[in-house]
Image (cartoon, rainbow, N blue to C red):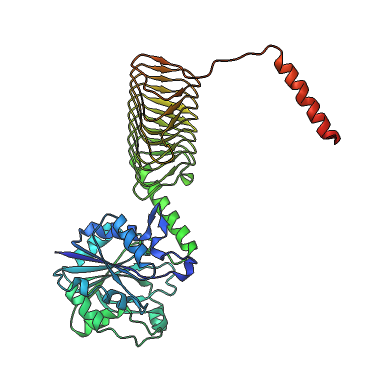
Length: 451
């Protein structure tokens, strides 16, 4: 069955106290909108429509960043969820299949849940996603009769008996595309809020003799984000689940609550992650890696047996081969390190390649930027770079070469050569004592107020 995904992303999110569209606030390094699109991707939709409103251009750009083709349609007035879905009607007027409605501010609907909804569609015209609420509060209530969903009642319109129901509405809907828009067109706004509720399609469907049902998911999946507090709760929900999943996979987290992951972090078993490590998007860690405390990784790959940190920063484009060593206060950016290479402390390696078993001394910098363009440094195999070496790119250091400590290397170094580029040391006998006396006298005069 062909699937169309409709993601509602038009809300401003007044309670977020932000100029940015609500759906672009981030959880685990990705906009909430991306989480919704990833969930819907489990159904392999052949069409995706994002209903935007406030900040529509930014929402459209974020949708493109997700690397998916989607139609962006506008909801210029906020008249309710049924009105929002109706805006997707023209974009999907020729779609022959099912449509599922998701929300850009409800980021945790699982692929498994959507798959169960799709299976439930085999026997029903309309499928609603519900959950048993620990505190039903102001959620809409699902009025069931056996496995038949009779109606959905919004809290404002619910009576005493209906408010006692704990099976609540998530807002997620699946139906045949043609059926969905036909039902939406029949919804009116005669209710306490004066809005066009998507939930009203159930009563319209039942009045037409169509069948409706609801399936249940865990309440945590339906968590909506409407405020900064909600955003913090959502972040913790994600992080807690990710930590459990990785530990269950065989990853050691020595202080789990202090480690933070991105939505796409991949780590293999027998890797150890020490306290206070942050993973940005795009990180892949192989097995038996040690990521030491207070390190920050993003957009990088680390192969088996490597050691990173403590206090290391791996930036996008970093690729560490097996057995590499990255030590404290080292930053690597857009660079590849071959097997056994070491950058143990206080160095910056950017736009570079480092060969097998090469050792980069403390304080080394690849000077990759001339103020306008970036340039590349190539370091061969079994090279020894002396401490405090400045490698002014573009420059190549041949295999088994060496640089003297404190050198500024501006030209290529041949294979097996030693390059030393520093001023000759000058020594002036007794000058240190004389200089100290002069400085002490100046300090004494300053303290006594003399000019």
